Length: 383
Ligand code: NDP
Ligand code: MG
Image (cartoon, rainbow, N blue to C red; front, top):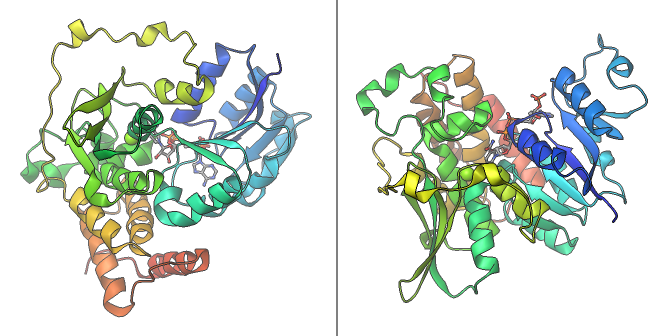
């Protein structure tokens, strides 16, 4: 049997770990064509040896390093601009798991590839919206969402028709679900990256703590499933056993349940027939016993209401929310701003922009890049 050839962007991250662990246990079925990192050369080098990958991509070029020592006989692609050239006719599946918003150009090249793409990076869907989805469609690129909630809805809708009333994506509520709002001002980056359920990269962990992640996911769902924002509900569910619901007109509900582990949505991509041994993810509901559900506390977590507002504005606004958030999260990680500033400064930045500029309903990629340049120069960081 011919092996499936996989190219993994962001192989050294948390999603990369989950993908490679599935491949490690099924080496007879997969070949790893290429892997990339930003700075973590040591880990990339180990993975390259283990999986005997043909191509290597390195985001952060350091002229002091002897890359040939780390990657003898490999073809190396430097900086995000060269990453697109790692795609060739032999690649069957692309995993797109680089974090953040620096990947917008690369995401469009991937959307042009005509391949099957497991898309973990939600930022590109939020910023580029219809541009990326229509590019994928016209190039026969199949985008399969790896975000657990969206993959759950994707699987539910693949088995059912589209005559539903609404979809619901669940939220764990992050590490501060039960913390008093008065104490939010003391939150440090090391508190915000400790997620109670999911082990993820820093950026998305902080997004989960502010619940900006769920706001971004709302916009992600709008584009992926082509829905009005009022058809998408969010429900806090701390156990993260149910990832998504589809509710029909007769008020019957289909839900998707699994142990909270990213290998489940990734295995939907790698093993669509569902024949794969994941026995360590057996879900013993008698042990779980209770599943709780709550409405989101919008006072503590204003990000979701704000995400709805920017989603309804459309045009440039979702990208503004997403790109500004990425910058503010970096500043918070580097202790330059406080936890509550992440959402407050985001709202203030967009207010400042839209006070002087009108929205562009159908922005081009150049409109989006010039807006991002404006944000780089004018982001609100307090008076
Ligand atoms: P990590 O921070 O764990 O990994 C990020 C990966 O991207 C690493 O390989 C990193 O390289 C690489 N990278 C980051 N910036 C750059 C850059 N500028 N140029 C080149 N490579 C870069 O993130 P996650 O794996 O947690 O998340 C990846 C994406 O998947 C995010 O968009 C996230 O929102 C999404 N996602 C993640 C989930 C999860 O459970 N982790 C769930 C749902 C979605 P290096 O190691 O060298 O820094
Ligand atoms: Mg998610």
